[in-house]
Length: 267
Ligand code: HPA
Figure 1: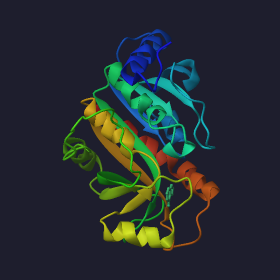
Figure 2: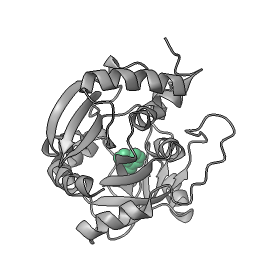
Figure 3: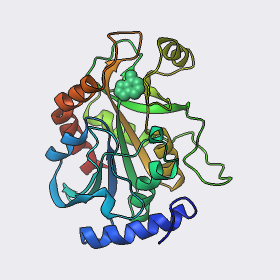
Figure 4: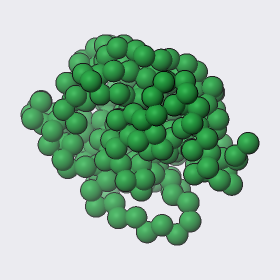
């Protein structure tokens, strides 16, 4: 069995082979990673062709967080074959970077040229309401880690592809863009950390996405990042509560699903 830590590329190929068998197709067009509260959005997205626990594929870990279903679904969305990861592995689970980026590597290995990364986040930016989606335009990596292996000097100028953000704006010009800062978690940020992030240019704070975006970009995929604002960042509103984060996600799921349903066939 290929080991995820010592041979991540081999592990991705091994999972891709099982995925092709389980879904009945060698290739998918696009993958979407559904973050906290986003999972119900997939139900309104398209026709389900296959659905199975993520742990059926080599290299994937069972979910550690409530609100992260730990399943993979293969869907037909307007003629495109879409791979949806219902949940993700987070860095704060303490199992290293490899399980965090395994999903996007497997998606790239089955032919996905686009990866849509979704998450729930806290917001620092004035004028954005709880329940609003925000397009990630750039990121700050506060994890001190990388989604890459070895000396790969990957350019990140357009990691969140301008082309895809423009396409979303053609569908809904009201969606704003923002810079996402990934903190390691699992604790939420302190108000001082939020102020620091704001001074450094962050509009959004969260605990995912950045390492996956870097790994996907390095694999040659175009990345679209969409954050759902579930709360005002620490110190700017009420104290934070994971249940409330999930509740906002669930309440917004239909709207997010409809947005994705419009965007995906046009990518
Ligand atoms: N900070 C970090 N992660 C989050 C937040 C937050 O405010 N909201 C949802 N996920």
